Length: 467
Image (tube, rainbow, N blue to C red; front, side, top):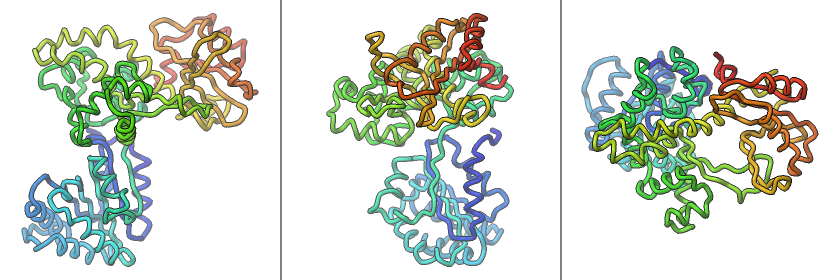
């Protein structure tokens, strides 16, 4: 797979590398998100000791680390084994006293499991050498919960020793687009909604197959690479995957409020808070409150990872069909619900696009916050929603409607959106602008109405994805 994206992360690593001081980076992120690929790109051309810890005994890890260290330091092939990790690390710090030398320990939690004292050992060595060392240390891990416990809990040995940290997040839509540069651009929203932003998942997609065939091959067949992926992610991160699975199932059914999740999942209110906080930390669930409001009690919990959202919406309910080798029947649920499922994904893509062009001449002002809004509508005596509301924290706001429809958007949609700007909640705004996002474009009447109104911008799918 070609290296794509991660330019900000690479720039941050390079800036630290050029500091001329001891640096200690804690890197963590979801499995298969591309952390090791990022590190490999960064260390190209740099003196490096790259050790991948194993789920093995301490002796086996020491033997591999010894060989890796000696090969990096002497450019030889000696197989000498240090008597301890203490001796091996001491050798590393000796060489890093007067030259920039990178030490990468990939999957650090595996090393902790086989040798629990390793963090205390590193704490002692860091405290002793950091003032006069040119070492550049990266400790990387795919278990975000274990990495958090190891480095961000104040009673752990390495707490406070890092000089910087890096949480490697899944790709957004526009980074994903770089990978699928040869794919029909109009198919990209589907791929983002289904595969999400994990680079490894992109490799499963086959250009020569239809979207239907790819979904069946990757999700709905016995042995499919993503058939059991959510379960694998949860087992790596949490101690009670069954409980988290119950929460995901409830959210996928449309249960989004804290109180409802507690009652529907049969979990005590005090416990569910901890579970939800973990899922938010893992970037699998997001806690969303209406923008332009202080009503925190209106918080909703939604599945934030696209692949998880697709899996719990379609795959979870079809597991019996998949396991009985009836993938075509399992696909029927996808076929019937995919377009509706795409609506939320399209809103997220539109939001990404707005942040991407914020400050450019495509928008009437620079905004500082953007997201969904919902609240009471006293004019219509019902609850109203705005797909995206972007504002500058002062007097300007952009009210957005996102339509994933095979039909062109008409002027009625523009009129309904304009009516929402008159709600009393927005009375303090003196500069109100409107934006329509459409998968299929706009009717001539809509375009004329937008031009006549003067405060409206129209974005087609082609505009968003740069066709």
